[in-house]
Length: 360
Image (tube, rainbow, N blue to C red; front, side):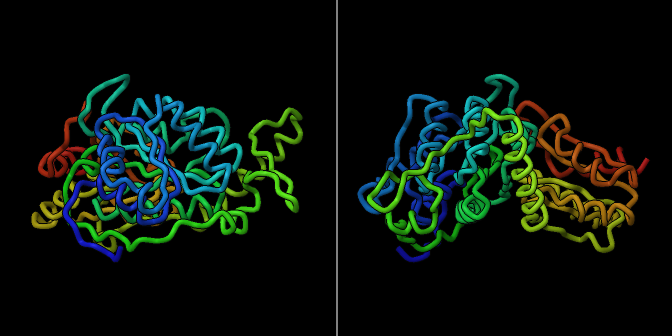
């Protein structure tokens, strides 16, 4: 298949992209608002065209452990879920990070805590960006703000996961998963042969052959000094990712007196609020973190010395704001505006919050 321009939901675009980027397998379980990912894969039947395995597991716990197995064999595998489903996956994600395996995770967020609502939210920032499972590990986290990025980040996520042998995660809110936009889907890529997998992933467990012993994939180390050395190696890798893989988008920041920091759909809403402020003569810019980890700490710190204030706009009670405050280190006032429970703020609300919180 060549590149195609189509109109579809974010969840659908992600599913089509997974097929076209040559994924070997998807293992998942339906939960609103991301169920269209599994549904689209079931309709497209890629096992008949590319050989991609698509399996609805019996639970999210089963799904993540199937991903663990596929990743251990060097395969391009992914899973998707929504907030409480990702909670169930946390132990498996920690295992995968500890075993240093590449995979792609997708979280289309809904409101919580608990079962919460099926409406959109951004309240999983702590759970995913901070590493919700046990131990000192990090997950490369991409935050799309369009249907196009839902598709594009599948390829980028797999690329980063294999480059660093680390889980990568697409963290989208329910609006981005459910909204429909024009998207350019990538051309179909061939899946890697078993020989290519062995050549590209010499660490993978692909079975014992006459000239190659099987590898053992594990995150278990019983000797404390060896486990410490493993963790030191992990932390060195994370510093390398922080040095090389920060992605962000800055708009109207060069002359800005105030900056809003927002990701996902809140970045789109803040864009309109910025336009309202600019028309009123208020110099406002936006920084949109594309990687929530690694976070664009340095760029926010750089702008902080020139600003009168920063407002984070999030659909939560205040989570990303903690990383923004750490970045500015007290150099400028940082405030938070958010809506909870699945309520989406409108641009006028954001504009009024900007004035009320930063321009008193």
